[in-house]
Length: 188
Image 1 (cartoon, rainbow, N blue to C red):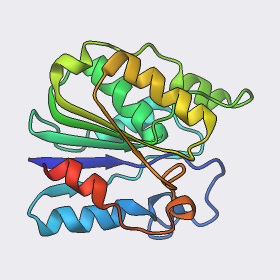
Image 2 (cartoon, rainbow, N blue to C red; image 1 turned 90 degrees about the horizontal axis):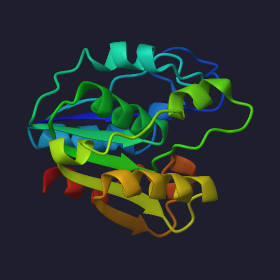
Image 3 (cartoon, rainbow, N blue to C red; image 1 turned 135 degrees about the vertical axis):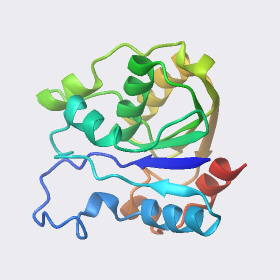
């Protein structure tokens, strides 16, 4: 069993391009990776290229450097969810679990990159190739985030977990790097 976690997409280009200082990897992702590794679960958290202007083919090239098999657990945050769902639909791969954290599918009106990134039909057959699907949302998630979750759930089904006060599952919203509910979903 292994786990791959795909981060979300910040709205603006990061000022510091050093991979150690990129803020979109600084919330629950490092904490979760550390916990999983301590449980002897191989975990990868690839940094996607230029995520403030996400391009599916560039994400795909980076993502496919990871070991993905029928025992893999895929976790996505925000636009990382959109990438994983599109990739699973396109490749027809089988995986153990798909966990979507604050999934997003609705682009801002003037964001051409995200219109292209989110603008694909969801393949309903994904649910036949993934043994368990879980989606995290929050009572205080943005309206488009709640609508996005409903779009994914309509096509993929699965379990929805709504947590109080977690917003869009960023450090600012959660006010903690710890995400024990996700750890439980990955390991059980």
